[in-house]
Image (cartoon, rainbow, N blue to C red):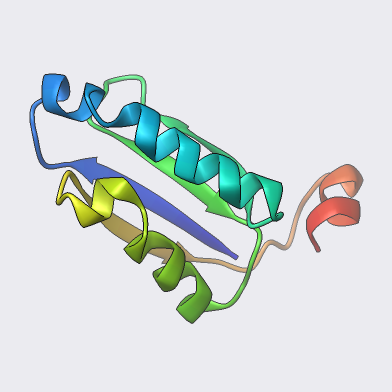
Length: 95
């Protein structure tokens, strides 16, 4: 499983101008079952995306098409982990 930790590279006013496009892109990924959850960090320095795939190449392809990436607005720290403890509802949906 993968988590992307986004780090904004531009001032927040620049980021805000592109949030709609970024979220619309994420909506297409939710519609195809590729994402579990996403959101902005409370300090507004970046965000988190949790992917519903364990294929690194697929995650990298998804990131490469994100407007925040294509416009050089954020960097993406990709974290891979193996979920070993989880609620049964999570397992039913994602494992």
